[in-house]
Every structure is written in C-alpha cells, then in structure tokens.
Length: 224
Image 1 (spheres, rainbow, N blue to C red):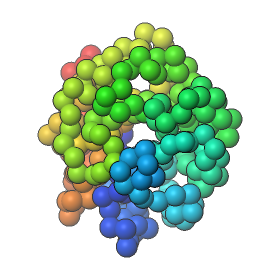
Image 2 (image 1 turned 45 degrees about the vertical axis):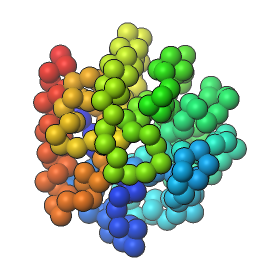
Image 3 (image 1 turned 135 degrees about the vertical axis):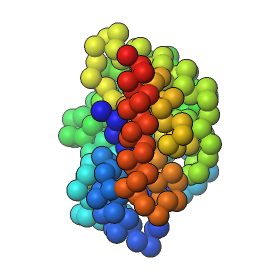
Image 4 (image 1 turned 30 degrees about the vertical axis):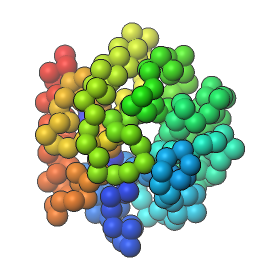
C-alpha cells in the first residue's frame, strides 16, 4: 500500500507537537524528520535532542533522514533519540556497509539515500542490508523544490534491483511530491512518499493526504 510521510521541515516549528498530532489524525503513516548539518547540505535544522522531544508526542514511526557528513559517529545518537527509520546518504560515508549494520544492530530500520547526481549502482551491493531506499527527487537542503523528472528512471532501476533479488525493501521518494505527480513515481515503483509543502501548505491535511494516497494507488495499480 502507498504510505505517506509528511516532512515537518514544512510544518510550523512553533507548533511542532500540534502539527505532528494533526497529520497523524489526517492519515500520515510516518513522520519525516529532515536533519541537515549546514555542511553536507546548505541548511541547518534540528538534531537528536529535538527528535527525542518529538518522539514523546508522535504515535507513528519517526522517519529520520540524516543529511550530514561525516555520519558514522552520530548514528547512535539518532537511534537513541527515537528514530524508527534512520536513513543515511551513501555519499556521506566511506563505510556504508558498516553504518547500515550498526543501524540494524541498534534496533532501527536502516535506510540508504542517493542524491539526484548519484548513480544507483552505488547502492546495489547494499540492498541486502537495507529496509528502505530513498531516492532524492530534488537536490537536498531546502523544502518546496520541484520534482526532477529523471528521478523516475532511478526509481524504476531500484525497483527492478529490489524485486529481482526478492528483497523486502521499501522504496521511498523525497522531493516535490504532490497529488498531481505522485502517480508517476508510484507507477515507476515507489511505495513510500515524503511530502512536505504539499501537505503543510494546505488547510485540510486529511484531504491532501487522502488525495496523495488515492493518486499513488492509481499509479501503483498501473505498474502491474
């Protein structure tokens, strides 16, 4: 089934607890938390102490996407803070195999992400260690960007890699996902979507999340 993970990067930071409760009531399947370090990406957001606070109010899985480098030494901090999924970037570590093992050993679901300019071959030998692959469909660092169409080819390639090996790996897409384009990404092979401004810019979270899921299921059905 299609899953939606609203990104709180686009939420009202003065009301994060209320915003999380609102999107959970509206049908969110997870809460996407973007961690940016001002080094790997040109922006700075929140870290483990804030995530630990959010974990106290969230009832859905915390989908933590860490855009930071170096990453290996801080992995335990995010898991201890409450990350259900911890997604790291393949470009941010020289030892992705070891990092993914560590995430799983600490009890979180391990995710690996690649940027728009990174070939999918970079993660092919890591799929057996992952629970989630995140395809970035924008260059990371800022919310509200437009979907990069060439990401569809990457989604197709990764879906084929996962299915041909029989792995149970979720395929997530992050960047510019909206009700009018989610069907294309779902048809290409994605099943888990991050949506920030598409959700939080609307007054009725329930309506937009339902529309995202409906259009995503249309695309998923066309895949078969």
